[in-house]
Image (tube, rainbow, N blue to C red):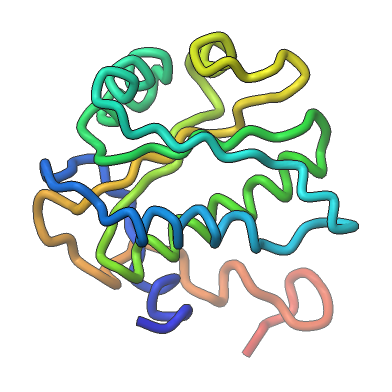
Length: 169
């Protein structure tokens, strides 16, 4: 699948098969995050790969909005340096990992921005000066999901040419 196909068809997955992901594919997903562009090449991120079933269960408890992490094959905890660039660059890395996984038929979803993510620091020995931006559970979807069937606003509502409010097309 090419990049645009991944962008066009990716959907959030919250229900995973009990099927492992090959180590080479996990490596590729992590590499996609590491190779993401970064402001001033600061690379303000770290990626904690969690595969242990009990640890995945605990992450699902700590991340209030993501109890389904417990059923993932693997989760990647995205940790960033404090500050706006960390959030921006970490977000870019997250999207790269999600799209890379999707291109291999592996689903994911962004878990974060609420819940007890700060408690994950202690659980995974993450230094106090680092922030957990998100937990990304990965796994093969339980059921086929409608690729490309997205509910998005029409392009005319979100894209403009030259100035805000001027029609794009």
